[in-house]
Image (cartoon, rainbow, N blue to C red; front, top):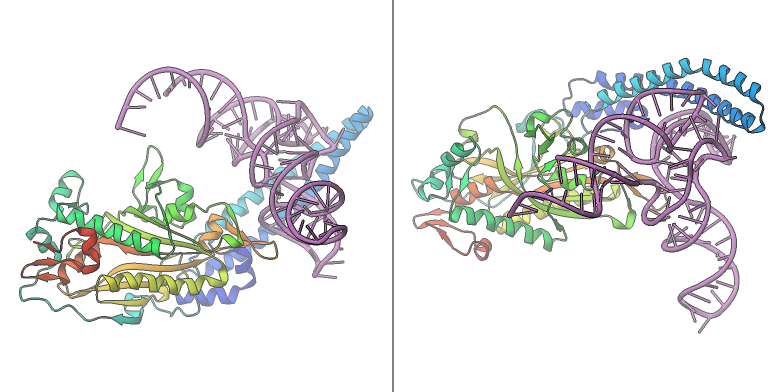
Length: 423
RNA sequence: GGAGGGAUGCCUGAGUGGCCGAAAGGAACAGUUUGCUAAACUGUCGUACUGGCAACGGUACCGAGGGUUCGAAUCCCUCUUCCUCCGCCA
C-alpha cells in the first residue's frame, strides 16, 4: 500500500499516476488526505492530554511515597475527571485510523513513469519478440487433443475426483511436469537464487502482506475451519518470509526461488480460451522473488526479465515480451513485464510469466525494511516473477513440437525427462 | 486431543503496580590506547506516529487484543505461539 505521508506530499503526482491506470475513484485521494489531517489533529490533542495525565500519575506516585495521602487523593480525583475526554479522543483516533486504513488499501500501486496509460490488453507495449512461429505438420492438433491422443493428461479423471480445472497427469505427462520443475529450479539456482520449500497454505496476515487480502479473497481457496488460504502463487509465502523484518543493507539483494502448486478459484469464464491447460484451478509454478535496495530495483527487473527469457530460449519457444499498460497491471505492481509464448496450434499468445516490481507497495504492508548506510530504516523493494508457470509451457511444447513420430521434447529438457519423444 | 510452564530490546536475561522505554552481560558500531592481533577503556546502540528550520520535545509499543487503576511489562479476561509430559500419528 502507498504511504500516507507520500500521498499527502505528492497529491498531484499520485492523481496523475493513478490516471495512467484508469483508476476510477481519484476522489479517494482527497478523502485520504482529509482523514489523515483529521487523524493527526486528534492525535496531537490526545498526545498532549496523555502527557498531562502521565505527569499527574507520576506526581501521585511521588506524593504517595512522601506519605502525603490527602494531596494524592485530591490529584486522583482531578485526574479521573479527564478520563472521559481521553477515552473520547482515543476512540476518535482509532476510528480515524480505521477509516484511513480502509481507504488506503483501496489505492493500487502507482505505475512507474515508463508505464503507458491504457485499460485493455491491446494497449500493452510489445517490447520484443523472439523466434519464429513453429511450422506444424498438416492436421496439427491443439494440446487438449494431443494429451488425449498420447494419454498423458486426463482432464475427465480430474473432474471425477475434484472438479473442472484439476487435471491428472499420467505417465510421460507426469514425468514432463517433474522434468520442467527440476529444469526451472536448477536454472534458478545457477542464477543465484536460493531454493526454498514453503507452506502451501497461508494465514490472513500473509495474504494481506502481498496484497491478496483484503480485496481479492475470492481468488483464493479458503480452508474455513482453520482460516487458512491455499496459495495462489509462491509469491505469497516466499515474500512473507520477510514480513516484519529489518534487514542489514549488506544482506540485499535477497534472491529466493520456490516450486509450489498454485490454487486459483478464478470463477467465471469458460470456453475455448480456457480449454485444456489454458486456465486451471491448480497448476505448478516455479517462482523467483527478490528483495532489493530501492536504487537497484529497476535494474533487477530487467535482469529478471532477461532470466525468464533465457529459459524460454532454452526451451526453443517463440515468445514476446510485453510491458503492461497501466490498466492491465496487477493492483500491487509498479511495472510488469509479461512473457507470452506463441501457440501455433491455437494461433494465439499464451501468458507464461509475469515479472513485476512492487517497489515499496508490498514492503510497506509487510513492514519489510533495511537499515541503510546512514543507519536509518527504509522500505526495501520487492520483485517477483514466474520462472515459469508450467501448464501453458506444456501446452506450447506439445503443440509446437508435434511431429508425425510424436512430440519431440526440447533438447535442453531431455536429460530431465529421460525420453526424447512422447509417442 | 489432555495437563503444566513460558513469551521482555540484535542475543542472553532481570524486573510481580509508580523512581521502568525498561537493570546487567554479550554482540555490533565509533573512538582512545597499540608494532600487528588480542585485551582494556570511553561512547553509541529498538520501532513507529507526531510537533519543530533545527536544537530538542510529546505519545504509543515488554507476543496480540480487551479490561481494572490516578498510574500496568507487572493484576484480570480472550487469543496466538513456543517448551515439557501424556495420548495419537506420516
